[in-house]
Structures are given as structure tokens and as C-alpha cells.
Length: 117
Image (tube, rainbow, N blue to C red):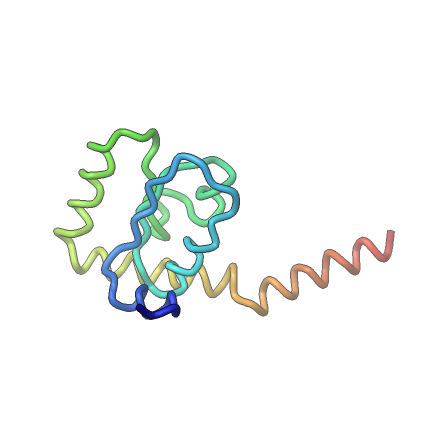
């Protein structure tokens, strides 16, 4: 088994994240950066911060009904072109919002503001 998560992300078609409770799931950003379409539970302030449903960065399922997950998952599996497009948009969002440079710059601005008092 490989310990490199990116190797698993590269061979996957979809990143499916049906969770009820999370802190800050970095794995969602990692999947997005790998160009995977993401299907996740809608958790306000958690998964909703990564992307907006319907904007094209990923798909969020409200509630926790297995049939809702199955429906969305089946739709993604049946649409390779749509899946690829969603993955490309997810990667673009990850790079523009969560790349190392973007995060470092945000921290620098925060520290400068705090130091300025």
C-alpha cells in the first residue's frame, strides 16, 4: 500500500464524502486539487466553505438520506464529461483559493493587521 494520498486520488473517478460531522476536512481540498469531482454532505461552515452547490466546484447533498447520495453518485458515474468538467472546476477553485501561496499571503495579511493593532 502506498502512503501517498495523491496516488489514490489520481486513480479515482469521484471523491465521495458522506459525513455527518467534521472539523476542517483537508481531504476535500486535496481531492479538489487532484481534479476530482467532489460529492459531499452539506455541512454549514464546513463543506459549504469549500464550494457552493450549483456553482460547479462540487456537489453537496443536504440531509443524510442514502437515496439522495445514491442518486447524485449515479448521475456522476453516468456522465463522464460532466464529471471531468466538475473536476477541472474543483481544481481551479483549489488552486485559486487554497494553494500554499494564497494561504501564506492570507496569514501574512492577518499578522500584519494584528501587529498594526
